[in-house]
Each structure stands twice: as C-alpha cells, then as structure tokens.
Image (cartoon, rainbow, N blue to C red):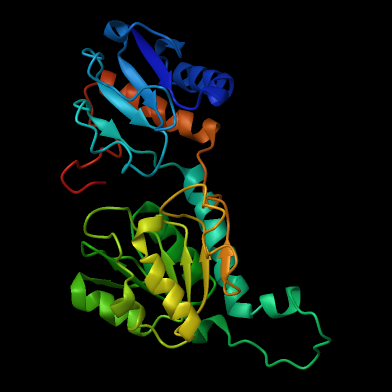
Length: 310
C-alpha cells in the first residue's frame, strides 16, 4: 500500500530531507510518494516543523499523523486546527548533540577556563579547580535529553542531582520532583542545566525567589527554553553576584534582539540556539519508523500529550 507524505518543514532543507526520507522509508519497505506540495485531501502523513509553510491543519482531513521534526512543541501544540495525533522529535542525533554541548559548557565552567581564555594581564598562579566528584551539577528536566546529559555528567564523576515534574528513577542520579524537591536540588547546585519543556508550569521556573535558593556564585546553563528563566530576575542575580555566570542558548525572542542586555553583560555568554539541532539523516529514520508503526496499527513513538503540553 502506498502512502503520501507531505514535507512541511523548512523549505531550504527539502532537498536534503527528500533524500533522507526516501532512503529511510525504503529501508522499512514502505511505498511512499514524497513531496513538499500535495493536495491536502491526498496527504496521509505530514512531516512538520513550525518554520514551514503549513500552519492550518484543517484541510488535511485524511492525515493519520503529524510528525514533528523539532523536540519542542510549544509553537504547535496549542494550534486549534491540529486535531491529528502529533509526535515530537526524539532521536539519537538530537540527544548526542545536546549532550556534547551540555558537557562542554559544564566542563568550561567547572574548570574555570574563561579566566585563561579572556585574560588581558599575565596570570600564572591560579588555584586548581575541584575534581568533578566534588562538584554538584543539577539538571532540571529528566526527559530524553535531560537524562542523557545527566548520565554523561555522572560518567565524568560529577555529583548529579535531577528534578522533573513527575518522579523519575535514573541510575546514578539523585532524582527529585515536586516543589520541595526543586528547592532541595537548587540549594546544592553549583551548576544548573535547564532542559525542561516550556509549559505553563515551567515558565519562569527560575524566578527571583528560586535563584535565591542557589548557593552564591552558582552558574546557570540554559539550552532548554528561553521562558524557563525570568530575564530580569536573572540579570539582578548576576549583578548581585548571586549567579556568577549564565550561558544561554535559548531566549524568549529569537534571534535575541540587538539591544537586549544579555549581549553586553560581562557575565553572560550568548550562543545562537545551537545546542542541539535536528539531523535529517537520523530524524528521517524516526519519521519512517512512526509511519511504519502507524501503517501496522502499532502505537506511535513520542506522541505528545496535549494536556501536559509535551
């Protein structure tokens, strides 16, 4: 049986995805027509990214699923025209990319490398950093990306504690949940990594009060979602020394406006949403597997819970 698959992602990436999807679908023995321009009534599956041209899903009356290419879902999950099942992207390329970025930034701050990279005067004698076993790193968000990052940091011998909205049990990680759990985790965190989804419950999760729970001089690393942090509260904490540095990869408005104080603050590092990106080759395999599962009557992988928002 043939299926019609509409690519509705970034149009510039269509030539790459056309090849990757065709190969992945063929490996599953699926006979598929791939296109970035199909009549809506003929579409069986939509391969989707929010920066694509499809924003109204109502005409796709026969679509069996919308298969997202992004890990984040906040830009689509509230779309009232989206009545089809929606899956988010969880794949090894995203996970590996995020883990590499997180461990790199944690090691940068753990080892105090900025003092050497940015020095202007001769400096020779500096105290050695503590060993990883003597440094506590907190990971907020223990989903696929958060748990992978936490386990990688634990493999480097950091003391890793984690927090999630729902209870989790991850080998080697001191896992907490709930309001008291969040305070317990933040109170011991010398470095905090934010990998939570953006929901009503997580917006501004690091506000002025919670930033105050951190040990003085803690470091914030946010490759998750910009709205997880109250920007003004963070700037105040940086100015007071409560937070020593913030390395931020995501922001409330992207690209980050030229006049935003994060650009010029001496204790903020801005990276342009590069911590993890969807790799077409690995993402295509996830998409193809979900189409195979749907056609076989099996449950879809990574199905989004609309009520929970992720």
